[in-house]
Length: 334
Image (tube, rainbow, N blue to C red):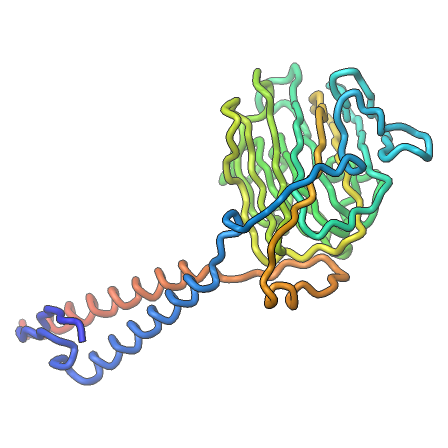
């Protein structure tokens, strides 16, 4: 039994055993609860970055200069639509003109279980800050080659969308700084709310400074062991920074990669420079293999962070003891 020092109602208690029974029992239960949660957190919170992984570039799912795999022929691995223009140094999804849409989509469905996507892009234009738009999106979806309101794609989609949103559509929204990167997993029946910048359905994200910058800007999207990770390299330092990390993301195989962009009343040049997909070979335990059942519909297992629960419990215990101390101290003066 750990020794403590506590003074309640004028009496000094040196151990939990000396405290009144009801108070001692509450402290024991709270302490046990905290220890259980802490153990659960330490045993279940795996660090996916420490797993042994091997990566292999999958050229059939990739795009890079001089973009020979992109075209309208049936032999091309990729095709484009809308206002997309293929240039020697980049693929311009939309020019700096109003009301434009453009996209590129893979013709080949992806059956990789674990993968990492690295995208180099450039967003630039003549408009001043907050007088530009709208942004671009990276997709892995069941549907392909569709027009819509979500960065040039349909607002009802089945799969994953990662958005580089450069304009705040929700005027009442002050918690986020734009441009902002976010992600959403759609099941085909839930819409991305463009007017609210996807706030009701996104998985989180980060503010980024990616418009009209002089250095190269990169986006990394990793899907490994049902965990979605988004990172950025946007400061010219050639190092990745965390943006989003979400466990429990379940994506079916056989979906299509794509990239799209749109402009409205405001505009920008949205350029795709490279799109490189790597297959990740990951070591799995027998338990992880059993958990890897066939996924038929995209979903996310929303889980409460155990560390947050532990912190809340500790705060509750401290507040309880403090209030008990104040109550006993007040009684002494009556």
